[in-house]
Length: 261
View: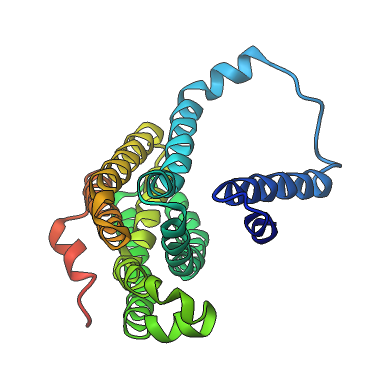
């Protein structure tokens, strides 16, 4: 949908419409699949009171996550240009594909494990370490591969006219581990019911991405890619420090899990 709209001259609105259409189509599919389990919406005060405290934190986290996901694209489009947005967004999402794959795989493995042992600090620390170890084993080789062969990947997938995306791809590839590791931290706070800590970190992440992208925009797409990658890495270390305090994991153990045996 985005391609024909862009061809017709809708500029960056083609991406906006495509994202909205994707959300609408997915919601329709899920509603159809779950039609036998859906009930008529109603409001129950007792149920609201039971979930109000936890759900508010997760709602704030969800809004902040969504904003952080797209705010850099808005800044690039408004301050640099729509052509540069195309380069930036293609580089970002090309790297996001393996990162999201590893992140979802990691979450499906690590979160259930953390949830089962969240009352036992020792086992919780062990599960957290395994999550970081799995993340490093998956993300670091992929990151190195993409950094080394970014040009060949661009020429193969996007074509000769997209060579300006090579440098942003290399920059984003360098922080794949931090993007996936951030989800491990999120799994820890989710498993331990720390909804407001989750929300606070997502708000910090959103603020870092927005501010770093805004102040680096005058220097071009590569500068924005570098600054946003810095925001991702900074957010990971802040989130990791928070979750290590929650679980009691020492900084030394956290560092050693990233060292090859």
